[in-house]
Image (cartoon, rainbow over all chains, first blue to last red):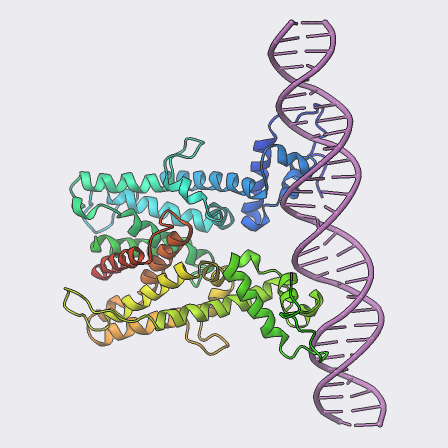
Length: 211
Length: 211
DNA sequence: CGAAAATGTGGACATCGTACACAAGTCCAG
DNA sequence: CTGGACTTGTGTACGATGTCCACATTTTCG
């Protein structure tokens, strides 16, 4: 199974950076088959190390999964940030709204492109506390922060009345997240990315009008 | 662990209704600790039977989990249906809208009251196909159907323009589901049911205005 | 009534998480 | 330097789980 090429009989006794190697293996496992597949023994196997070695870096399996989850959340944020704002076709451009749309689209696209990772990102019960809190320890911006500041900008530019602002994340995020879940393994599974994009746009328009 | 009172040394060789006994045990396990806790061996233990007996009724562990999931979905639907419509305080009553609000409230209340079961309901990848399809084999009405017909009624009574109707479930459900997820183990965890209700109401108002 | 189908039992195996004791490098105080 | 302490990986082991196979018992029905 594990070719010696993968586990190259490292010459040094120490691995060098086992912790990150395990996380990376875990990420791969999550990408391949979702969070329940990130399994200690297989991760150590891929890192070319004996199972127990993992315990020098993680308290238990859940700790590894948490770390994987954080990586996944970071990648999600990157996907959101790097989604291009496309030009609004007919509607007059509302400043800042395109940004939010892009974030949402990136969110959905990531969920569709990396369902395993996406599920891993939200698989651990206590991770969202970190997520909604401030920064991940890696220093990356979180998805939640991205949304928050985009909404702030919307208030700034006068599009969104300030009294509507408080808690708006808690309208937008659930809606998008729910849609993402439906896209991954709900009744909308198998929708093409373009269709998903359209659905997201409709959803956002609907919410925007409401707010 | 398992008291003989629970597994009363059945006199007959056959169990009688092992299949349902296993499902029920599975439901209990899910209620106690979520879907990952519905484990074949423990279920059979609770049913007072040897592990392998389960394989006469379920192809594998996932099949049992699917059955549990269906029960959970059915209970969710019941919770939605039996949620009373409370009187709108100030707003003029929009016919049919109170119904939808009640359904949504029931959804959120169930998620908060039975997080383990709720997670189990949505834990299996292929269940939602059944859910969104027609009826569960048990003949109960599904949550999705409840929402659909409520929306139909809204069109009927002229509140919702017919051209806005198509796919409206896919706006409403994701939003509510996402909120439920946030309430269970997201940043909104620990919100009191009353506050959750308020949040749900705000969310729905926001969406309703948009549609 | 007797054979076939249904259902539960017993035993076995691979895999997993994890604990404990030990070994091999690494590093720093003297 | 150098020797002990610390870190990190190894070996062995145990209990739990999912699942397979052969067997026993009970029910059912031709």
